[in-house]
Length: 316
Image 1 (cartoon, rainbow, N blue to C red):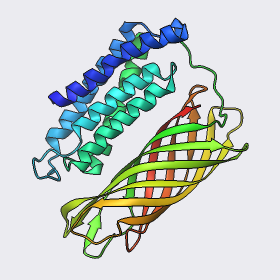
Image 2 (cartoon, rainbow, N blue to C red):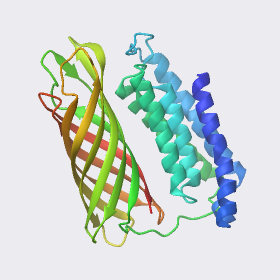
Image 3 (cartoon, rainbow, N blue to C red):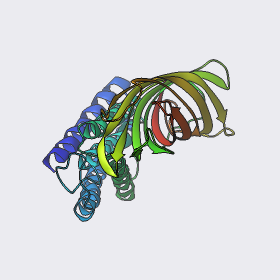
């Protein structure tokens, strides 16, 4: 657990520096809370994370992909990383959206490293991410009970602006990649740039890293991973004059596949997806959202998957 502690302590420690620097840059101390509620927020989140992660870690016995232990689910590194990211995001998103996107990117990077190093299955890091986000939100809830917010939520409307998203997606395969093998829940981490060219339509460009576990005769064989680049159209529909909007997209492009050397697949493949979801504008520059989608990739035989995504967004 030492590595997990190091992750969350180092990331949360930057929170106080971020707040101080941002207040000096913006000249607006009303957006910076005193240290007591921040400590209550972070402390409660850490305790919640320890309780949830360690109970599950020691009660659910599942072999790691590299066969190094029976404590694969959930990923402790990922749960700590997303706890830290959630605490930092809750305290800084009103100051600047880039702190939140930066923390989300770091947490995603830690999660993907655990998968590519074969220490965890994708479902382990997805479980760890869920525990981490829940722990961070519990900390925020408890902090609000004892310490009233020193600032209220800024007015914000669902205006469509150029934006950058950091996305974490769960992948649910609908078939097999090749005969004799099977796959299970996967994960994708992506960056998506959207630029509107009118009130409803825009263009989108996305780069992502995804990974799927491959099984032979129900035994784990390897991770099949891919780096993808896609582009396409995006549609925007605000819901009245509120913070909420619906967004849909259709993207297509190429994927460079790697890993899983024991099965036959195309190294370079076509990939396409369609998504629809909801966006909530928390400030004029920051939003969160979720998408449900369908994706197809022709590894060789072709694989269809359903996706469920959550993302943080910075508006330019």
